[in-house]
Image: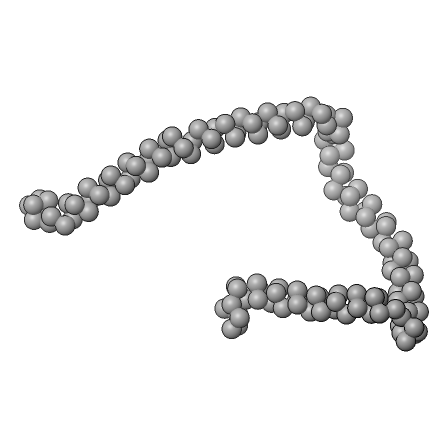
Length: 139
């Protein structure tokens, strides 16, 4: 049979590991669990008061609740023609400015140039994030 006497390094390692585990358990018991319980109580109270304050917005009819998703989607789809019309009007303004680009004040030219450079930089930041934070290539 094997005993700790045959493996003194293993015995000291196990003793150290057990001590570290006990210390960690004590820290969790004294420093982690009480704040978590307190936070849960505060959160429960916050949710209860928020729901009480906004009870008028809670829909209790199951049929009406089922319609909410459709109402949201189709209400937003109904706005699309107005948004397209506003985009066309905005495009006409931009085309008018580009037609007379020699008369544009330098503040507008600078703002447009800054916006173009910023957009270009954010594109590259997105590429780097998409690669997992590496500059070399995709995984």
